[in-house]
Length: 345
Image 1 (tube, one colour):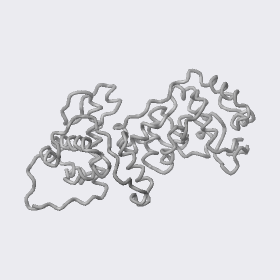
Image 2 (cartoon, helix red, strand yellow):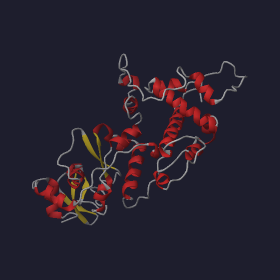
Image 3 (cartoon, helix red, strand yellow):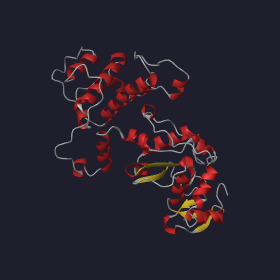
């Protein structure tokens, strides 16, 4: 473990308690697998990460700990914490941070990784306590400090929160329909609609069928009404898992829609990492992909994330939607459904 890793973690906004915990986990991994830098130089830690992976299916089948790490307690939770520490170290190595020059290059260190981490720590052994709340910075950083990069600014803000990473924020704050709710729709589109913001509200023929030309209203209505929600929360947005805006079979299909806070919504369009996470989450819940797509691969960090539970199941989706639509006779989606038909009518 490079000695400048502590400084890099601090630059990400972590407090000393969290940093010590990260150093401890990295040191434990190195104690049983050797230095992480060697694994990074070999295959960017792919083999090591695979050995620290323990899926929900592994847990369900009661499979034993596949790693060399000894511990007591829940296998999945323990390995997830060590795997997360390894992924963070890989991110550090991939950040381009230059290794500090050694004061004695001809004298390789003979200290064990655990002792090396202890020497680098200001408080050893690390306290096994919950991370302390971050103290406000003196002189808040401006967008100029982030080199006018909004994504980097968002990462820094999230790093100082309980979520710590963008991936975990997405996992915690994205809401999907319950599989039981989706099962009643067969994964099909609820309304015949596609995206065409220049001709919103018009009806035209598309690929041999008449459809509503819409913005994001019909997918939003589909998600709200099917899930028995009578309103959207403030500063929330409904996002497509797949950018299939001209696919009438996917545009208002529940497996293709999730709800997030508005500040995360932009990432569902611009971040490949976020798109991969959401697509695999949808596939895990519903085993669904749009026509022409293959099942997504599981992102490497997926198992280390804690995902929010889906919304509560709706017992009778058809009746719930009929009731919601009856209360909104002038709604654009309802008017089009009367003319074009919809999944249940």
